[in-house]
Image 1: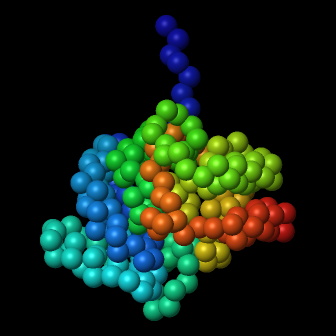
Image 2: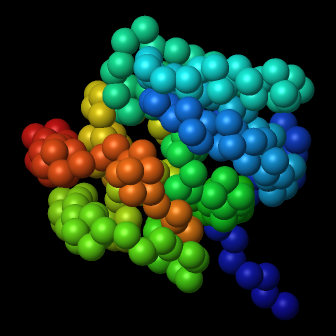
Image 3: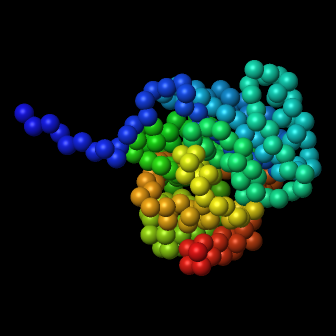
Length: 254
């Protein structure tokens, strides 16, 4: 009887408590949500007994973000937090770079400090990497049947346009380039020289990972509990124009 062909390129991770996911949390003026967000992340049990590392980067918040983080530490002293702090406000992209540099896990995921994304869905992004199929996994707000808060029409159009333009120049077919949930093997994301300090991180990292030889990028549907501006949303139309600039810069003038 013939044996099925084997694919030596697919090497699943064995179930092991030695594997660790670093959750990088950039935070700027998130006093209203940081405590609850840390609590939600800490409660998540990851598939295949993967451990968690919380890396919080306070981007020089001017509100009580830091005191809320310290309150969480006091209430839950058993939960270790790798805390980084900027002496001046540098932007989300800069905070993510700091977090990536400080992370010690086998995998790294970005988690905004607000409550727009559900940390329980780390377990939707991990399997393609743990099963040996992927090097990078994007969580798409526009794929699958997960809950999605109905908000701004032009934000949706803008996101889809930016994703289309990015796909056009990278020649990859993702449905949500601007998503927060991006999960990387650590060696992949740490090998990239990132430069953008604000929300240009998304198109920059997408452009740069798309050029890595033989990179395997997957995506999976996730839910989205978006905020209004009165609830603390920070990205605006200027960041949309910056994203267009970054898509062109990091794809055409690479």
